[in-house]
Length: 130
Image (spheres, rainbow, N blue to C red):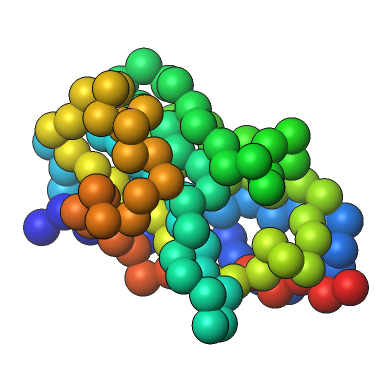
């Protein structure tokens, strides 16, 4: 059974850093569209960063460009989200999501649209204090 598991959340002060990990297991597809989404209380789930693991193309929401970096380790089937210079508005539950059997055109078109990702992890909490 394929599933995703996030880790690395925690509490930091504004300006601090965290690295989230998303471990994918049970997948036979080496090329996947992998996204990080976040949701704060009362807010909609929003896309943060996405990577197409088949070629490494990355996509970032404007709110995190220059601060967050998404990367992959294909050998471990793991995707990371390095978050630097965190702000209080970055707080929320961060989810890893996957879309499989898709190409990079799909990944580019739907990078931040949650309904186009079929698999989801349980989420990891990120708290940023001012």
